[in-house]
Image (cartoon, rainbow, N blue to C red; front, side, top):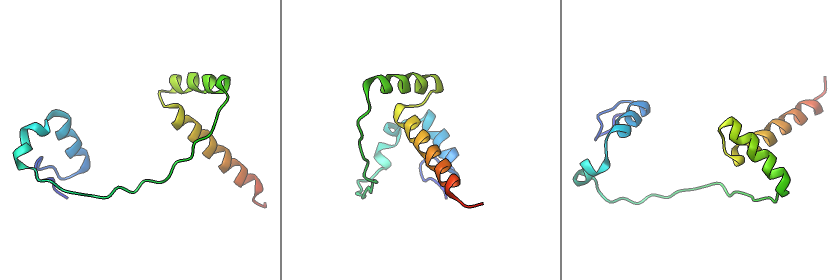
Length: 88
């Protein structure tokens, strides 16, 4: 893979390039395009305000969003439950 504007050969190098450059410098080299974005549908749930406040505090301490922390905790619990249900 090679990026035509940055001349980078990896995603990391492309990221490094765009961290220090502006698309405005290359606007004349761009062209209009269309693309389709497919996103997984998200589900929303209600959380009691006091529970949310506690989770928000923990998320802040860990440097993550509340959504990320709750997703992590739920995934970990589901994995634990799955392992507990396995025979042996």
